[in-house]
Length: 346
Ligand SMILES: Nc1ncnc2c1ncn2[C@@H]1O[C@H](COP(=O)(O)OP(=O)(O)OP(=O)(O)O)[C@@H](O)[C@H]1O
Ligand SMILES: [Mg+2]
Image (cartoon, rainbow, N blue to C red; front, side):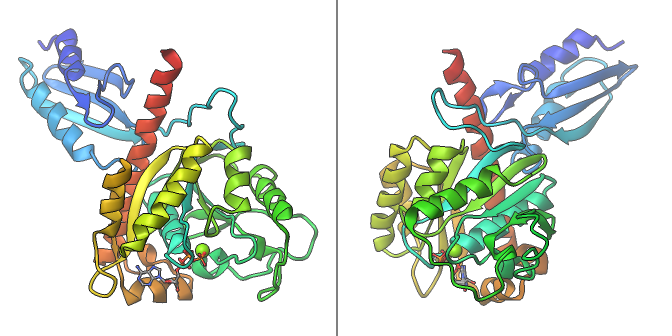
C-alpha cells in the first residue's frame, strides 16, 4: 500500500526551479490519485511556455521513486497563466489581458516588430492565448508581417477588432487605413490612439498581449506605461557597442515609469554586426540577457511575406531561437508575478 501522505511529502520536496517554492504550495499539483502502486495527478504549470518542464518532470519522478510502493507515475501536464499583480496607485489592467508584454528599443529598425510578431506567434504555438497590439501608429508594420490585408476594417464603422493570424489575435491601425495612407498625428493624439487600442478593443481572454512599440522614448511608450498595467518590457538591441548607450536610455525610461524590464534580447547577432554588445549591456545594467537572434535573410523574407519564420520554418534554428526567447519571457513573467505577490504580502 502506498501512503498518500508520503506521496504528498515527496511532491512537497520538489521546487519550481525559478519560483523557488515547492510545487504543492504553488498549487501546481491537482487531483492526486493513488491506487495500488500507481500515482497520477495533474501538474499545472504557470505557463504553457515553461522552459523547465523537463527539469520538473525529472525531479518529480525521482522524488516519487523514493516513496515505498510507488511503481508507476502518470503526470497530466496543464498550464494556467496568472495575472500581473496591479501596483499600488498604478494604472489599470487591460480588460481580459492577464499579462501585457511590451517590446521596445530606443533606436529604430533594430527588429522590434520582428521580435514582437515572432514572440507572439511562438507563445501561441506553445499553447498560450495571445494578442498582438501594434502601437506604432504612424508606421504600422504588423498587418504586413502577419499577412493581414491592410484596410480590411475600413468600412462598416465598427471600429478596430482583433484579426486572427497564425494563432495570434492582432490589432493594428493599419486595419482601418487603406495601405500606404500616411498617419500624421501630433504627440497627444498618438497617446490617445494607443490608449484606445489598449482599452477600447475587445481582446477577449488573453494570457499574453504583446505590444509592438515605435522606437524611442516616445508618446506611445509613455502613454502605454501610464495608462495600462504592463507586466514587463523586452528591450531589443543590436550587437554594436552603441547598443549599450541605447539600452541605457530605454531602461532608464521604463525604470522611471515603474515598469519592470524582463531583459534584453540581441537581434541581428553574427558576423556582420558582431555579437555580445547586448549581453554586456544586460550585465552592466543588471537586467537579464534573454538570448541572441541571428541576422538571417529568412527572418526578413518571412516578415515581408506575412508568414513569420516561427510558422514558415518551425524547424529552422532561427525559429527555435524565437521559441527559446518566448520561453524566457514567459518565465520572467511568471517570476515577476510571484515577486509582486510576495511584495504585496510583505
Ligand atoms: N534577425 C534578423 N535578420 C534579418 N533581418 C531582420 C532581422 N530582424 C529584423 N530584420 C529585418 O530588418 C528590418 C527592420 O526590422 P523591424 O521592422 O522588425 O524593426 P523595428 O525595430 O520594428 O523598426 P521600427 O523602429 O521602424 O519600428 C525588417 O525588414 C526586418 O525583416
Ligand atoms: Mg517596428
